[in-house]
Length: 236
Image 1 (cartoon, rainbow, N blue to C red):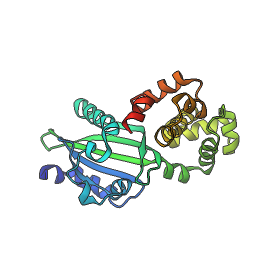
Image 2 (cartoon, helix red, strand yellow; image 1 turned 30 degrees about the vertical axis):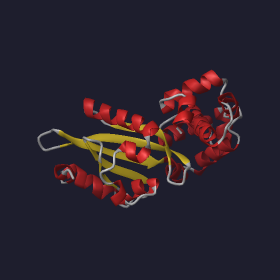
Image 3 (tube, rainbow, N blue to C red; image 1 turned 45 degrees about the vertical axis):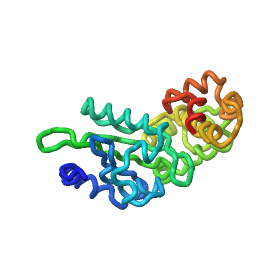
Image 4 (cartoon, rainbow, N blue to C red; image 1 turned 135 degrees about the vertical axis):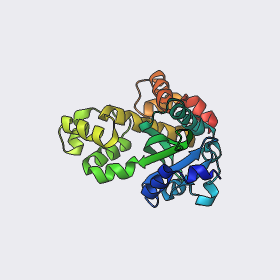
C-alpha cells in the first residue's frame, strides 16, 4: 500500500467528505492505477466489498471498453495538472442498469508538489435530478418512454410545467447541459441497452432511438462513448 498517498492530508480530507455518502462515488488511485481507497457508494455501484476493490486497477474492475476512457482521463489530468470537472459519462451500475454520472478528477500531490495519485468523484444524476426538480425528472421519464419521437424543447418544457427558457436554465444548472444534449444522452443510453441486450441491427437501433440515420447515430455514439456502436457490441 502507498502509505504516503493514504496519509496525504488532501486524501484524509477527501475521505472524510465522501465516506458513507451513497449517491457519490469516491476513490483514490495511485500512479500505477491501483485503487487505494473507495467509499461506500463506489463499492455499492460495483457490488463489491471494499477489500475486493483495494489494489485493483480500473481495467480489472470495469473491463477494457470503459477502462480505456477512464485511463485517458487520468493521463490527461496527471499530464496537465488541471482537474477534470463535471464530465458527463455513461456508467453500468451493479444491477446491470445504465446511468449517467458527472465525474470530476484531480491530482493528489505530496508536500513537495510531486504527483502521488488521482482523486475521483462521481455523482449519480438520477438522484440529483429527482431531488432537484420533479418536472425535469418527468421530462426524462417521458423521453425514455417514447425515445423515438422528434422531441422539441417546447414540448419538454410543457411536460416539466415550465417555460422553455426555464427548462434550459434548469437542465444546465442541474445536469450541466441543455435539453437537446440531454435528449441525445438519453437516446444513446437506450442505444447501449439495445446493442448489448438485443440482436437488432445498428440501423434498426438508430431508427428506434430517434436518430436521423445510422451515420448520425454512429457519429454521436463515438463522440460521447469513444468507440463506434459496432465496436461497442463486439467488446460486450
